[in-house]
Structure formats: C-alpha cells, structure tokens
Length: 531
Image 1 (cartoon, rainbow, N blue to C red):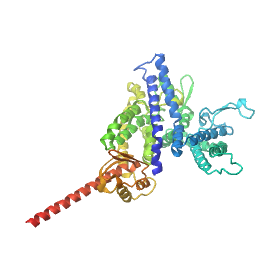
Image 2 (cartoon, rainbow, N blue to C red):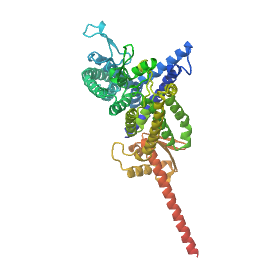
Image 3 (tube, helix red, strand yellow):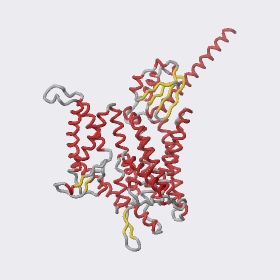
Image 4 (cartoon, rainbow, N blue to C red):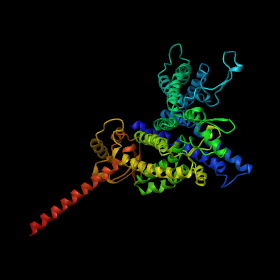
C-alpha cells in the first residue's frame, strides 16, 4: 500500500491545478449562468469575454488533467527529462497509429481528439472519409504509454555500446524501442478497443431498457462517477443526456427531443412542467452540496494539530464554497481515492444509492444545459436558486435537502470511522498490533515520543532523542516521505496515520498511569517504613 499512498505525493501538484481549473470553470459559468438571469444579467462584452475565457481555460485544464498526472509521474519516477520527452512521444504515437486502423462506425462520442491529433482521410489516398479522431480511451492509453516508456527506458540503460549498433546511444535506443512498441500497441488497440466499446454498449442498453428502474439508475450513477476518474465520463453523459437512451419527448408542434438533459432544457424553455426527466442529474446536487462538503469537514476534523488547522481552514472553506456554488466533485473524488480506495468504494456505493432513492421518492431536479459537454458543470448550487420560485419543483427541492443532509451525516461518520478505526489492512490482512509496535519502536519507543499529531495521511511526532529513529523500518511500513523539522518529524504514513497517533496517545497515557501507580506504591512503602 505504500506505493499507492505515494501516488498522493506525485499528484499533489496536478491536483492543485485541477482544483484551480474547477474554480475557473465554476466562476466563469456562474457569471454568465442563464439560470440566474433573474438575479443578475451581464451585458458588458469584456466581462462576457473574460468569463468565457475562464470557462475555456478551466475546462481545458480539467480535460488534460490525466496528461498532467502522466507527465508528473514520469518526471518523479525517473528524475530525468528524457523519459518525459519519450513518454509524450509514446502517447502521441499510440494515438496516431491507432487512428489509421480504427473502426469508424461507432457513434461520435466513442472518439475524442487527443492533443490536436485528428486525421483527414479525404486528403489521403486510402479508404475512409472525413476527419477521424482516436478512440476515447480515457486514461488507458496513458497507462499503456507509461509502461512502454518505463520498460523501454530502463532496458535502454543496459544497451551495449559495442557491436553493430554501437553508434546508437542509450537515449536514442530508448526512442527507437518506444517508437516500435508504441506503433504496434496503437495498431493492436485499434482492433481490441471495439470489443470494449461493444461491452459498454451492452451495459448502456441494459440501463436504457428501463430508466425508471432504481437498480438501473444505481448502476448508471456508480459507473458515471467511476468513468469520471477514468477520463471516460463524456460517453455515458452523451448517451443518457442527449440520446434516446435517456428518454424521448415530443412537444406540441411535433418536435422530438432526446435525452434527460435535452428534454429538461426544452421543457423548461417552453414552460412545460417536467415529469419524466431529471433523474440522471438530481444526485449531482446532493453530491456537490452535501457529500463533498461532508468529506472536507470530516477531513478537517481529523487534523489534530492547531498548526495544521490554521493552515488548512481557509482552503477547506474555499473548497466547500466552490463545491456548493460552482459544483464539480472531481478534485475531491481523486483525493478520496488516493487517500483510501476503500472509502472511495463507499462513496461510489452511496452515489449509486442516491440515484435509486431519489427516484423512488420522486425527487426530480434537472439541469438546464445546451452547451458543449466540455463546459458541463451539473449540480451547482446556483442552478438551484431558480427552483425556489417554482411551486412544482419546490417539493422535490425540500426532499432533496433532507436526503442530502442525511447523506452528509452518513459520510462524515464513515470518513471519521474509517480513518480512526478501520484504515489497516486495505487489500491484505495486517497485524495491527505488530504494525503499531514496529512503528513506535522505530520512533525510539513510547518513552522517546513527547507528542504526536496527525491528519488522515500524515503523522507528526516530537521526539526526545532524534537519533533513535529508524528510517528503514518506517519506510517498510509505508512511510513514503519523512521530513525533519524544528518541531519534530513529519511522516507521510498514509491512511493509518490517525490510528497510529491514537495508539501512541493511548500507550503514553497507559505508561503515565503505570508510572503514577509506581510512584504511589513507592510513597506508601516509604511511609510504611518511616512508621
């Protein structure tokens, strides 16, 4: 698990960029949000232009976030610029070679332009027509590129400088081997990925057979949030927001509208009260207004140090406000996943249950949206303000607030309970007593620890004798970063940090009580001898 926890160190900088991107997208969208035109109306062209710029920058950074993580991991893994460069080459070559051989018969949402890679077959003397983009593979092409880069670069360091290819140095050999493997992988993916698409279509068809079935909505909700992490969220959104899989509706003049969001938007524009749509959107309001703030509150409450609380309170306040008013759970979801895959699993299950229960209780609050999916930001609190004026939607709004409050309390409880009691043995059975003993002994023993503070992923200890610390043992138990500071040691132990801190305090208290009892016995003995 230490390798998994160390991913948080790799992703800290990209996560900061992702958070900033959500702020830009949220603020830009809020300024020109047509759903709050009754509160403010922006007509100044410079303000509109600036808002659109914020939206585009934010959406673009969110879109390339996986690439930023990919570059960060490569640079941290090798601490050399060459693997980063050849890693980008591998990623580009996989997508370029894939595009020449892919199946172009699938709907457009199964394809996605990657860093400008788009091939116009009309100008090439080969079969095919139109502009073709690579498959929308999310993070999977990046994962394949990473393993190709890692293996080829490491192998190139052992390339012999003698023999017929002695004129090729190590870096050039890495580029050549990566080029070959990337092209082969891209061509292979062109024939393999269609089977993945067919499997996804079977899954989506299963849900679309009855979108009023709570179980089907639960499956959609769970997959949709997982697909956001995998970089594939545009696929389910396109299918259920804007195609017949998400429902159909014909207006009074015979125009057909397809998809949950498209129908809600059309009905709202025509003053029709929505009766069958909104179920694919309503849970977003609970996620952004309640569950994500609940996670931030629970995390902050687990920070025991006044210094840490003083540093973090403004960030968490801003994060909560952005989640509530602008709406985008992605940064928090990545943080939950990196801190604890098990807690992320609980989160996904809760989201799925929300889709089911909100439908059962007939809670319908849709999303008025007709822009490109790149700028989609469903579940923002600002979008809810308009519905306080609607007598039809208000009952759903009240029920949603009650359900959301219950979900928030549940998630605070789960988060605190997990980090305080159940963070050991995430994927394997771990001897809690042994692990705790080894870590305390590596800190010089319980008598060597003056004070201990923690956050959900960090342990800070003040020691009497710093020379007694055993770095090797701490690293063997998952400490991926150990920093010495004036006030003690900052140790990144991952999600067991809170449990270790609590155990240290418990044992320190037990030792203090034992010493106190010994002193009392000595005093009694001395008094008895004097008498």
